[in-house]
Length: 313
Length: 129
Ligand code: B12
Ligand SMILES: Nc1nc2c(ncn2[C@@H]2O[C@H](COP(=O)(O)OP(=O)(O)OP(=O)(O)O)[C@@H](O)[C@H]2O)c(=O)[nH]1
Ligand SMILES: [Mg+2]
Image 1 (cartoon, rainbow over the protein chains, first blue to last red):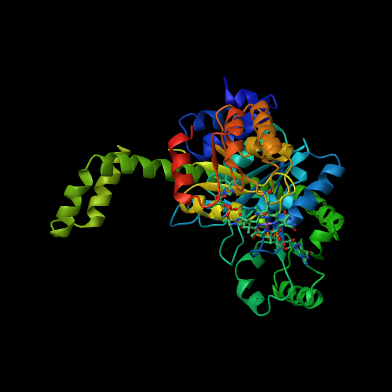
Image 2 (spheres, each protein chain N blue to C red; image 1 turned 90 degrees about the horizontal axis):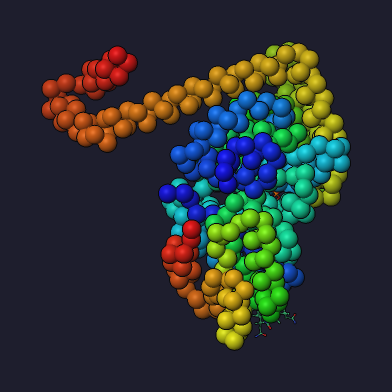
């Protein structure tokens, strides 16, 4: 392929796939691809789908995507599953729930392993979103790994975040309160065919009302049975409502500005880390420092100050 | 080094999925990213997933006897998608006599019952592009 980014912009589907691979593996041409695509991003709307393992995130995403397709929108899906910290391998199984969707030309699905990232996404998810955005899809779903309470990176990547919960989580609801309950713009109780959906809805309502602070958007709590396609149009309607709301009150701009800032800082952090590693570790200079620190000839604080000064000269 | 990505696929109506799952787990433990799409995939679905996921390897499992028809079909469709370098392998209950024709059709290697999974891992590592 001559120029991957050009091909992506022309709508070449294989180029889209290849571009994401280049980025995930931090190949030499990855930065160049992103530089070329960046001006063409900012048009897609990003929906985050998160929630505990097995809650039905993939099944819901499949059905929601179909609903968006029936409303004339093209769809990109990024589905993330955990990478084993021991082997570095992963089984990416979200597509199992999306098989017939995958044959729709207006849908592009890509599975990603977390590859060491702990926040529920992978480090390259945000860039993969941008590649799909530049390719020209209207809506991008990002399905996180099954989360506990602290994997909340999705809020930084998505315009609207939906938290999927299921009945029968019992007291767990208290435990997750601190984490993922704070990030939902929309809550969907999936598997509402199981006992306890109404009870969970009541509990959630109480919790959100107790939240105190008057917010101008009170997260709605919806019910769905994803594998029977029940409640899907309501969820999509609510996505639209939330989008209109945050477009009107300026919150979308605030979120995207914050995202641009965070992304720049993350990139800078990573580059500085690489630079330091290169200058200090690979060159072997670090050994002398460590020796001196161990012998108490100097201390880590002094060394780091010195390194910083010489670096920023 | 890029991470090796493998699509483990079950084409056709064959419901035997133990072997595919054993292979998927072994490949994960070898450090590969394995995309598993579940049972009853059409050759078209497999080829589309292989391209969109940009996998290095397509690994198909068939125990029902439908391999002479389905394996070559997937090879053709994957190549048509522009995936020229993708390594395509197969396994399952496949009579020795069928293997030369499958290789002729572009299946790089065929693994039959009793194969240690390490042999599969080694083959992929040695032949992936
Ligand atoms: C267990 C089993 C079942 C289980 C399946 C459970 C499941 N979820 O998988 C059940 C009871 C459901 C079943 C049902 C049937 N079965 Co059955 N089954 C078997 C049996 C005994 C073992 C298969 C197995 O799981 N082996 C263990 C796994 C780990 O081994 P494996 O799949 O061979 O995988 C290894 C290698 O082949 C290779 N490999 C496999 N796939 C891949 C893929 C890649 C990419 C690679 C690299 C390697 C690789 O690596 C693996 C590790 O070494 C075989 C007989 C046999 N000895 O193979 C018959 C067998 C496969 N079944 C057979 C039949 C006919 C049926 C039924 C049609 C019976 C019926 N009339 O109802 C149904 C059909 C089911 C369906 N929906 O398709 C026949 C198939 C005949 C044929 N090919 O012509 C067999 C061969 C028995 C026989 N001798 O007649 N079966
Ligand atoms: N009873 C019932 N089962 C459902 C419903 N939605 C999904 N399921 C089933 O729940 C199981 C898990 O669904 P997935 O969509 O894979 O869940 P997930 O949240 O994506 O799972 P992970 O990605 O592994 O965290 C599957 O067997 C689905 O068929 C539902 O509304 N009711
Ligand atoms: Mg899932």
